[in-house]
Image (cartoon, rainbow, N blue to C red):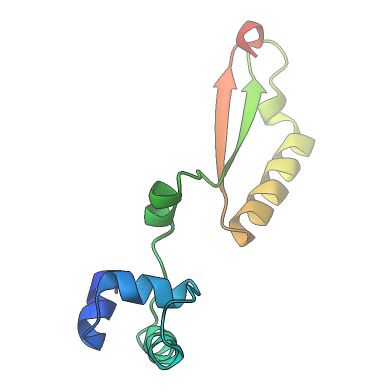
Length: 106
């Protein structure tokens, strides 16, 4: 379910629903409680990509990996690091971006 569908089910505007879910003070407390309860009932979760577009925050961590001569990507320690980092980023709603580049472009 997306925000518009939730708003339609509640008979509210998407703006009001968004503001209620994000704690804006101008939303009546009864409305906020109704919106939050409906979001739980319908298992609504905000679209993280839409939030990132709206806020201008990428919520991504990038890693640049040199590949030409050292081949760090096949190092078992590197694999453990990337796996652990990926889990941590994911738990905190961040994406991981890996860029493999020649050593001279590092």
